[in-house]
Amino acid sequence: MTGYQEILTDPSYKGQIVTMTYPLIGNYGWNKFDTESAKPQVEGLIVREYSQYHSNWRAEGNLGDYLMEHGIVGIHGIDTRALTKRLRTNGVMEGTISTENLKSELLVKKAQKFGGIEGQDLVKKVTCTSIYKWENPTKKKHRVVAIDFGIKHNILRMLQKHHCESLIVPAKTSADEILAMDPDGIFLSNGPGDPDAIDYGIKTIRSLIGKKPIFGICLGHQLMSLAIGAKTFKLKFGHRGANHPVQDIDTKQIEITSQNHGFCVDIDSLPNSAKITHINLNDQTLEGIELTDSPTFSVQYHPEASPGPHDASHLFQKFSDLMSKDYA
Image 1 (tube, rainbow, N blue to C red):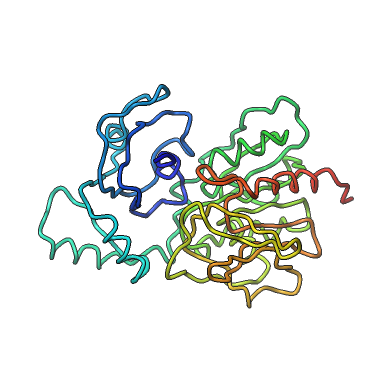
Image 2 (cartoon, helix red, strand yellow):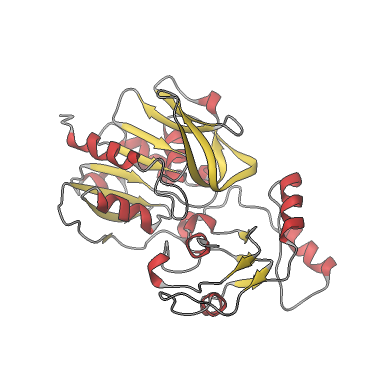
């Protein structure tokens, strides 16, 4: 099974224990090229069988050593099928992994004390601390300021592929500071946790709408929706994995998408200025919007995938096309 390294290093998983449903994990080790951030972001990893021995020409070490180096706890020998069935029935649940106190009743109490991620600002734990520039594209066409709410490396690679020079800024960067960088467009990244807790991001986005073309993904989509007056809610069953069918409302085409979110925008709370562009075919939840009065659009899923399908990668070209237009 491939893709576990990208999952473990995705900042959107901050504050969460991840259970892998595929029975064998670790078979190709880890390498620095397939990471989505500088380090593992999950709080813990649960697998059925861990492969201590890896075999891949790109590998730089085994998965266990990589997790230990960064202080991430993992556990194997778990019946992940039974655990998945329980989560499927009950929804997201609190959990504890411990090597110090193995009394189950005490671990249950510890898990029950955890208040969940609602109301928590997890973005502050994953955003960059200073402005940095992603590798320059071979042919520079646009300058993009990407607000880092927990951005994945493959998003930056996709922007680079579309000839964008990306300046990545901390999540608390003000609208005035962003506009002073004279961007052609503004990107709102993915990230972890409850969007309602990111009040500073909502305020900034509200001030940016209409000033420059804007493209938001995942948490960026939720924050943009809150900025225009919509509401969000917590899903009982978060959307995880790389096989979620999404329909484009205009074209009626179906795209298989990669998703990783536990909150969703309330479709009934959208203002008249927001046009619904995409719907999830599994549960009819909102997957995308665009604003009718400004060059602004966003999607709940991950068009850059990594891991996952690239059915929706054309959205980066859409963003590039918007930046090529004159809005003066």
